[in-house]
Image 1: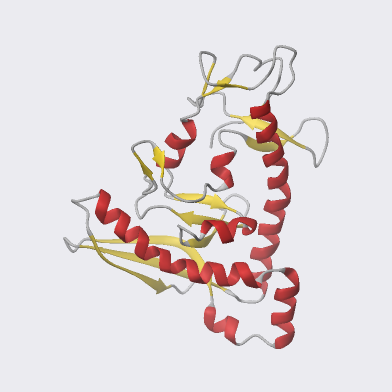
Image 2 (image 1 turned 180 degrees about the horizontal axis):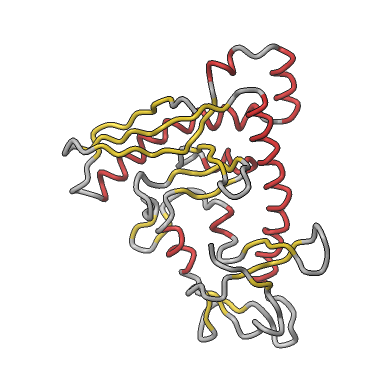
Length: 250
């Protein structure tokens, strides 16, 4: 994982961001991090699944953008092809990091080696007086909102796990040349378990505002058909015949 440093108006006053860097980033992502607050927009194009962060053990929500790692089906001719851009794209190449100025405080972090940055051309980060540009101010506001959105996503995943509403699945991709591929580490809503919940439990989920994203995630599985179609349009030599979900024991 790249080392982040705190963004500084003194050290990084001449730094600029290549406007195309977000497209280059998205083109290499088969999973895009999303939040529970974004589910309604994200499912317009993507199947959405849970996966566990190996470093924190927390549940993440991810939009599946391709069946192949290091590739996205939603970037063509350097253009983003989906209706919605997940917030991880909108704030790229900036991240939240712990601030050195106190506990439970956050600041903007950057990877200085990222080719998204240069001093030659692009969107400037600071004015000559050291004040953040409108571009950087927009990013800062978005990252500040992401703190609460991340908390809500964490709480959402924890509640579903507590209620036994998550199930582990594999996605089995069968190509026309008969070669199989398996995507692992994904989880979705356990619909059978959902149907056994009591009125009290359903009322709790409704009060928390969790029922819409739960149903949205379930409905988003149908977007796998769209991914297959996009794959077969873009990859003539890697045509997919079928895709199926397989329940795992974990």
